[in-house]
Image (cartoon, rainbow, N blue to C red; front, side, top):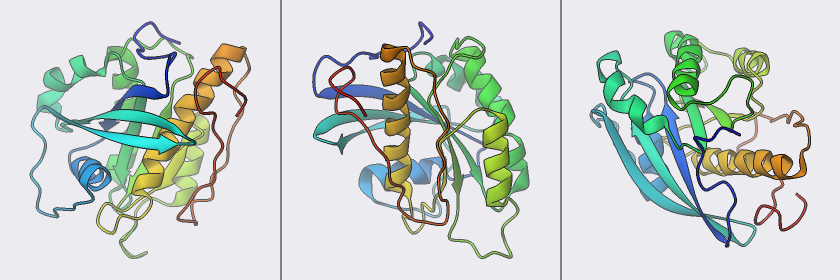
Length: 221
């Protein structure tokens, strides 16, 4: 893993993880963060200027993970403000809106920007998760299909993806749990020098089953 990563080997049952949410300015990144942290939703929230962050503890299999969640401004004019915060990230959530094809098309740009400024070496496994937000919208409003998302993720070597709705809270908690599980899997395999394998996710279900170990190095998944 890149030297830019921090808190890689937890020494106790409380692990701090830095999570960065990336995506265009209209995909609902702030709404996702606020729904996860405080279970609140503000449809008229303003665009983030620069960066904001909130903390929340997440419990998985008797382990506590403190997520330091960074919400970054999606507008191009804020690039110089947000990119310094990419370093030291443990997890990156690439986010788009299912009713806006352009936000999906820009995922590659966001991924490349993150890898460059976080100083992640090419072909280094990293815990990316792709989040298609606004799943509460009707099928007639949808511009990005689940198949398109799965295809893009497969082409980019990303094995964790999910559709969410910050508005009705569908899959929001599970998205962050999935992100932590992905981090655990990569860290465990790095410790064991194992080759990663692909996971499949049924996007039609609201809850995704997963396995994890409590603390890295303390046992098998």
